[in-house]
Length: 155
Ligand code: GSY
Image 1 (tube, rainbow, N blue to C red):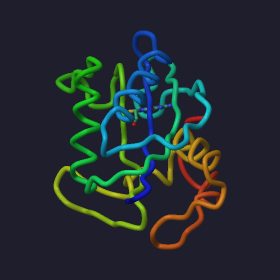
Image 2: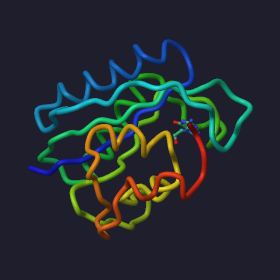
Image 3: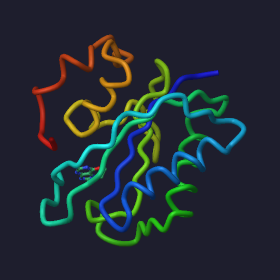
Image 4: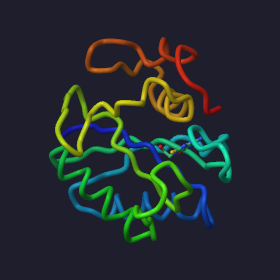
């Protein structure tokens, strides 16, 4: 059993309902248990700034899946909830589910990078993660709390 952390974001439709439904669908998978969810927070868009504000959160999950299998599950839930990946890469989306951390595992393969490569520079990711575990560290030992304020924005 591994503990993984995922980031959730939405800036289209009923954002809160979509994020809650995404968590319900993940938890319904017998191989996945959602053990903790951060508060949901309104954030200014990072990257393409001319788009609606996001609702962001993070969740801790316990899983018997391998990282690639978990990623496939996240992508499937995104699709089920109407995510259309054919549009602008950084544009509005109904649901975005990012695999942020998977225990101390490091993966760098086509289509799968863990820890998430932009985790350390995104306040909208770091803050909810730290709410779940203020002592959380990257596999290389860096404390997430020390990364806040060293990178990009996205409050
Ligand atoms: O990478 C996730 C999608 N996304 C977000 C987001 O979730 N929150 C904020 N604040 N900005 C974002 N820009 C992108 S792309």
